[in-house]
Image (cartoon, rainbow, N blue to C red; front, side):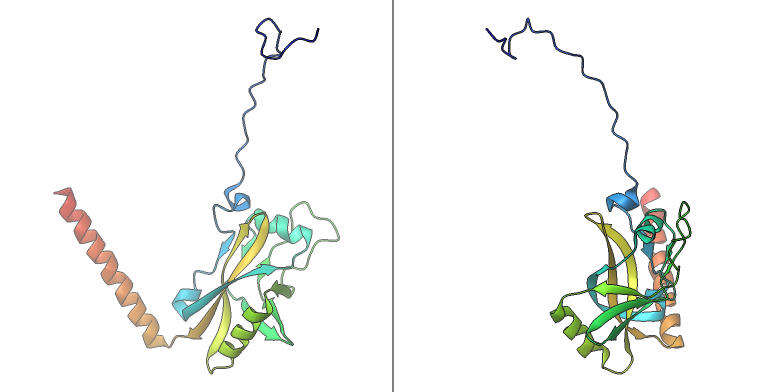
Length: 179
């Protein structure tokens, strides 16, 4: 007669306590892989769109290592397709001679309706596509594109004044709460 698993007389193998290794926050999608901090300073950002990025294997590994930079990058719509230009993804540390070119043009993956909407918006004078952040979602690299209009010098000074006033107000509130 076979023994039942619920029978307390059945010897069971001791379970090994396996400590789960924590995943890298960038790879797990908890932290952005790259952020374009200068975008909000240099542009008025409006509509934001999430796009997939067509990458090679070594590029994905480099992004996981944190070697991506979006500072001078911009999006380009051409022939019904969207491309990411000037996005710097450094070479993979354990790559070989087949490693990727760091400044190559990468295709952005968008739905047709999103492409049409962006095309209509960028036809307006002064509007362009600027990548604001690069991140992982469900193991895939995504790029957040924002419709942007360039700021004049006086706009940048006004933004800086507002930021300083907000910081001073927060500091005054914090001082008042400490008393």
